[in-house]
Length: 127
Image (cartoon, rainbow, N blue to C red; front, side):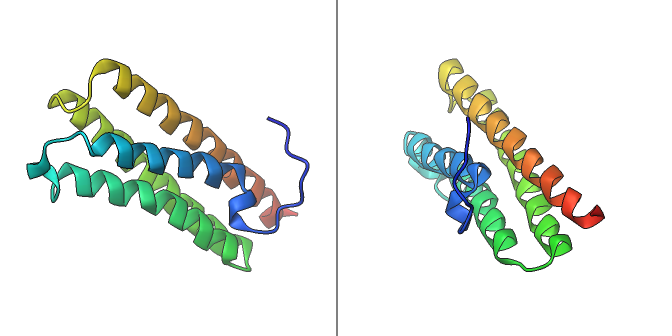
């Protein structure tokens, strides 16, 4: 994906956009989970997913590159947490195979983009 537009806001970040797609998908998928899980796995997955894009946005808003990195790393941690929860949801029978693989694929794609954002931000620390 080529991206030539000048980045002016966090919503211009491809990593944020992919993360946002993942958040929306998590909300849609967890609507199908048993209602008695509203305070369990549903809440955990939604909070972890929202935390990904929230930390990217907050990091974008920080002035120093060291601060930005700190928030991007927190987003990465939340993404890893979400991957664990997706696996749990599959293993307890809340996600069928097809949805599981689509979710993992989207999570991995978001993680790759986030890692690229982290790498690019690191280059500004050393230059």
